[in-house]
Image (cartoon, rainbow, N blue to C red):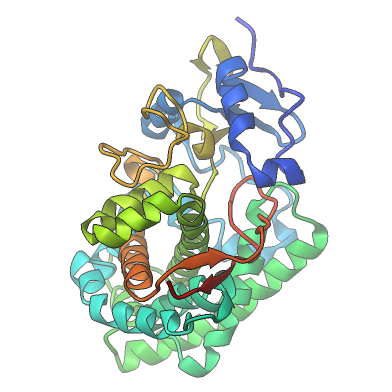
Length: 402
């Protein structure tokens, strides 16, 4: 049997055309090349829902590479705190970290944030006064998760402005077109973030507070607890994964509503659909389009042999529009059920922050629709080029009274 064939000519994910609308490209890939190798990315990609879901549950695939990169010394802080977090580990280490973090990020702690998330959303939506134009991304979607996560962490308010730039610089290295300059910025962000987290963890260990850093610091003395590096790494992951996903989901979700006014009006009349609307937003235009794994042994998918050690790219963006998994997948249906999208992954790598992201998004859109009359798109938005993350640069909107 042949190995996965070469990348189709139309797979150019960092072009403007792909950024504007990747879904026709994904449809062609699912049909003509469900498994293909792209040498320029060093990955074999999967595009169909059934194969991606199976890959997420297959023990022959894992997130950690078989061998460490020989180039790691170039980014010591990034390697120390990002490449060893919960997302990047497997086996006993992953199980231990996930158990400890799940305790610190418990449903009770998330539920306890509800009233405060509502207060934050109220303040942000108040910016959308009648006939006022705003950039929804910069003025609403970005501040909400930054404030929520900073308060969840126990981050000093005076230093809150650092979090968004650090997050953006660190996650930039997940993209396949990252430059040497991007790497330098990511390394600098990791060093600065780690220094502050280390100091805060020491403070909270001596004088605990009701926050995430204190909860993790209390676990350092446990024989099966966290190391200081793992504590720092976990806090970075909470910011980076939770913040980027929520910002992108909020922007993509509002754009979907603006382009489907009948859905927006239905949601105004039926606010009970807010939960299913958020799930449909996450499926229809997901904030994360690529998650990779490594083959721990030779495997065969769709008649293609993937060798041991190969990097496998799971294209969530393609899977979430697969007609084999979703009826009329290109239709934005805010009452869709069931809706087994992969926006938060699946199995052992299902996103621990999913309850928090859902809380933020449901609160945000419930508040938005209850406090605006007639939202208008003021200019055609532009998506940021990316294969891993999908999000908007800006989203200019106006609340025009009826």
